[in-house]
Image (cartoon, rainbow, N blue to C red; front, side, top):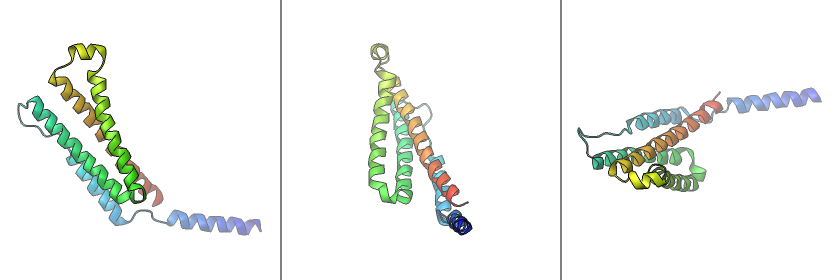
Length: 149
């Protein structure tokens, strides 16, 4: 009896291990998402003003946010609404925290009140958003690869 149970276990485990979680099309889509992610760069004109820097950084961040929403639409379908809402709230808090970090200490409020510090906060938020979206891509890709072996 024990050998029959053991045999059933290995057969069911083998069927699970051979089940492919992500199709070839989904792997191709993930590659395209990675390519699109790489295009979300801060693109500034020569001799940019701080307004130019802010605009370029916001545009690159919005590009990254758009990529995250693509990921949610394709790979988080069952929980898309909640995941998007949580993500969008996190983005707002990333911007708030970046400004707090760089501009809200007692010293910073006294001495760091120029537009340059606002631009630094926006840049810091961009780097956090970039890392967050990169992690979403990595997580989905890892899940697909893990389930495909």
